[in-house]
Length: 168
Image 1 (tube, rainbow, N blue to C red):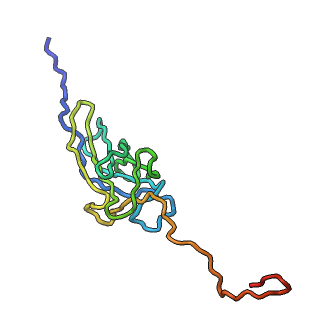
Image 2 (tube, rainbow, N blue to C red):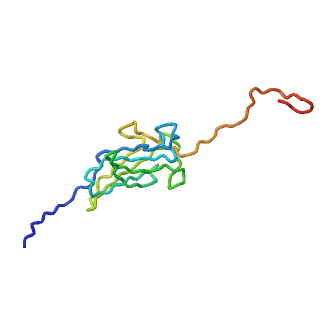
Image 3 (cartoon, one colour):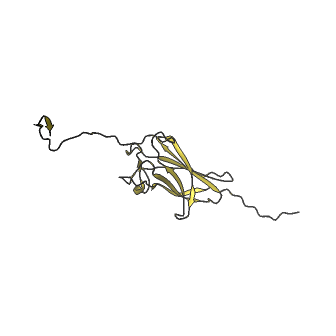
């Protein structure tokens, strides 16, 4: 008996059409909008084609060392996929000390595959070297050091003696 069933063959992997890395949600204490700090949420945002049966993830690194990996989730209000990361203090969840200098950027790899094993092209980038420079940022997760402290009297009046008690 002849089988007239039509079968489809999926040989197209999910691909990253566009992407960017941004400070998606800051914790309200950022003096500089281009510097992420502790507890800020970093978003890798991507448009992904052929994603109906796909899975995609983002991995972030600092100085070549793996920090974290997050799965992309579709955000319907943005019509984009988003992978989220939260900046932590040094030593927590593999986060190293980052001082906010131009070299304190995060690099990333975006990977995708579908249920049939088709893998997409790995896309890489840098948080401080993006096509849209307005989205560039670095990370500062170290506590600022106090450079100087002291007490000063203003004006500094000389000591006088009132009945054996020093008065300033």
